[in-house]
Length: 203
Image (cartoon, rainbow, N blue to C red; front, side, top):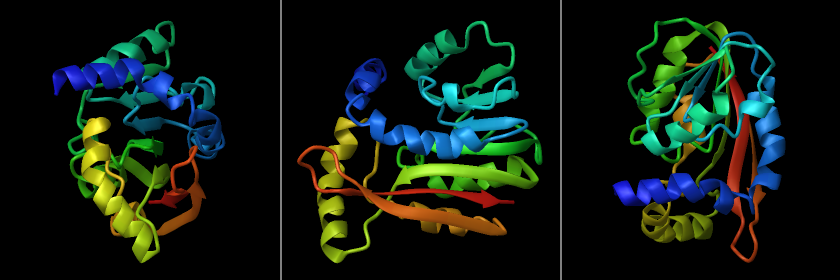
């Protein structure tokens, strides 16, 4: 698993380059709309950094050592950013401390998405906003069956990404007073379209 995580971290951006042009608008709609004291869950190698409000205080949570190594290089010279090695399920952060939180293509990877979103809710200030972009479980029976069948192979190849999580349901059950999301298909090459969702919540 250590070797696969190293490989995934070092080659992620190369592999992701095929998809990234399609993802950029959603980074702008999530990271790009964060204001004030900002928390990013699963910051990876720092692909969201260009979209954050300039000079806003950033707390970047990334538990993977190899991704953290890349992230540290990207934030060198930034006085407004810090990195935490916490898992998203257990944040060493006080209640009600952030104005904005964001995750992009993260809740598919974590062990316990319900706990992660619960922690995001906990650390947001009242009125704080959580922005998210994720791929999700399809609406049709055929689409869901395809995702369930493909998931074990996909999860192995991506060191933990799950294709078949109902992320919108997870977020909706965590106590936010407003939840808004838009679902849309994303097609990559010859693969069947994968359902995606972009949205935001208010604590």
